[in-house]
Length: 326
Image (cartoon, rainbow, N blue to C red; front, side, top):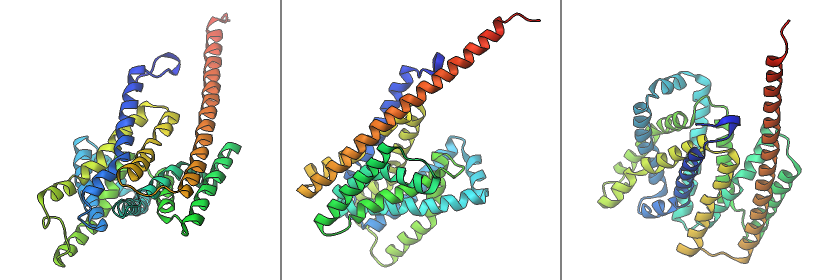
């Protein structure tokens, strides 16, 4: 990324980063429309297609970008392979639960899961990485937990869809931090590891006469094949955004996706939004506001300290150059 003096980001690159971020999170926000369109196929079949076609698309793209040697290196690294095998299972669970939620009119609860995911990440960082929590972060986690508990009590069951999505993606992110592979290489290898089981399952469905692919209509077939592009495109947009934007900006943009999912669930698909939902979401939105404000404030303090340290180093270097030599 191009930067100007004193670490100021090039405005053109920032605008491009925002554009990529809007594309990525906007796409993820409306991806439920795609899964509604392929609902003639069972959720497990849709998941298998997503695994298989994503592997084909991402492998071809990675090789075309000259990342073949990186893929080979990651495959030869046993620790990376074990980590990515685990993350592949976690992301497949996350994908399946979301697909099931969309096709069974539970998109509202799915959006709840992605709203609370940033707070779950804070909790996991505290438990597994020993990260210290600031008071605002503690308050955010407690408030979000209160909202989820309130919803569970009033709907008469644990909101398992939301919790499964939030924690599966949280653990996925936690483990991916330890994998020696970037976003493209990592997701390519994850889908390649899932490719054989996915194809085997599709073959079994075909043998038992339960496969929708090639047995329904051409439109459904094309949409299922497009699962690879549907998976890869927003990931690539996100990677471009992350390279150009501050973490705080990316953190703000991420709330677009569950917001659009909530809008789709209530306005487009007519899912009920009861008083219990309103109280729960109010708690979670308040928690996210606290979390975002704290992250923004802490980021400004850290950036100010970094600039002060840089100015001190530059001043010291200038004084050394001007000092008389013996």
